[in-house]
View 1 (cartoon, helix red, strand yellow):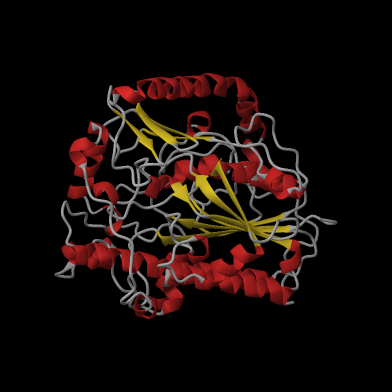
View 2 (tube, helix red, strand yellow):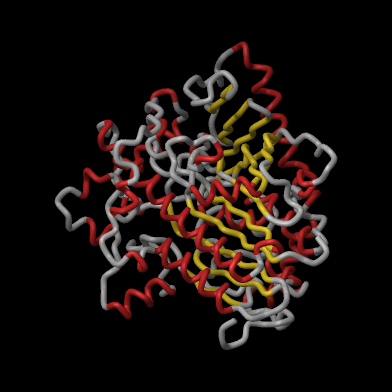
Length: 496
């Protein structure tokens, strides 16, 4: 690259890895993500560092694990965000849609934030704020769809959080956010590089496509739900499932034994929501091409975590099953090999130092994430086999103080700090994770070795991250206020 590229970073919320046709999901309709994959490199085994929104995103935007940055749940404050490093390096930094920061609309290094957050916030315990989507609904004089409005329907308990979008399609949060992003791109008149983060709120529940997109999945052969096996799960996960059976979190009524028709209906709505998102990705690619920016823009597409969709008897996330921890990831643009797939185990937060590398910004030595840049070169990248994830201090996963996952090649362990119970899976022979080897004597040595690797990882972490606190103190002002340095060719009034 002869000049620093623009970077468009598209992040969906709660999108499973098996939702892009070009990456092997034959049940999906994703023509625009397919063309992005044809232009770029796909990471087949991209894993999150925490199975819920804010911890995953705080980890992504700091390059550190939750136990380092202190964000284990959605309402805990962020202390650092590498976006400010891009702004200080001359990038115009813009957020459209969801970031899930705390505070919700703090600057965190962005010159501009046009926030649209969660679809369903109608719960008395959630922080109050009015985002751009709220304002659009206010101007229309309408009540936003939510679990509160849907509870008025007699069949609410049978829908499993899946319903058809009935308002103007432009008010759908994924369409609204996608069109805001294309609007910004169409109006931006600057000449310097830009970093545009597009946070699409879906397919996080409620699963709410328009009828047009839902019709596309009528009669399609959709993947079956992995059967529930609560009696074989650690008590903490049994407690999580019990909680979800009694709480319509995010508008999802979870049933112990849904009918195949109910499960299929829920999945059809979810997949149709992904196809709606695919259309918005196509619109972003089209406006980049119309601007003449496509050849100098690196586009990243990924998600913050997946969705169980009933697999193993679970709803949404907060667990360490593959449906939750593995996410899609595609990167395309200058310097990125086309049509390439990477099979190594890599982590979502590795995108942080990768983006800094593209921008010519020094990667802080305390970052625990590793740049993916070696995968885009001509020489073979060093093999990477291990990824870690953790979750703690959550109101929903209340049965454990800390849950940790280690995936080493195809062996996966889930450790609970306060229990002798756990999970151990051989993903080569058991890809759907139905045979827990935790108590199998034949795997005792494997289990002990992997627990020891978790101990070493946690012990080495504070040594690696000593400079993180100092970086947080230095960046405290810029985190909460818009960057004083405006990128060359700042956003001006008028159209191109």
